[in-house]
Length: 159
Image (tube, rainbow, N blue to C red):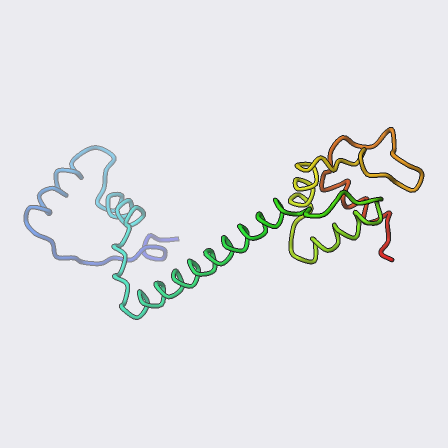
């Protein structure tokens, strides 16, 4: 295959200073004008085009919408945290069925199992303190977790 089949020739006008510099570079052994141009093209990074005012306005709107959504989520989170901290405003449940009903109610309000578990544990309503059908379990966990609350809801079905 000849050189002309996989290469193209072109002409370019450059300043005398740049021409002189190219001559100096190609005078070094192993460096050709082709090598210099190919390396330049491979490493060339064009300047980013300036963003249009329309696009900039659209981006500002998106950022504003995201900030509003974040603010709403933060407010909801702080409300949920307040609800979590005030999860129990009533006396300790008489049994696990009553506790399961309370947990389901808090889940419907949007609290996570972790928030509910933290609220119960903060008030000392640990699994070993809530009586089951046959009384307190000796092997009961010392604290509520996401897993133990989920297990409670699976074991104690709503009435």
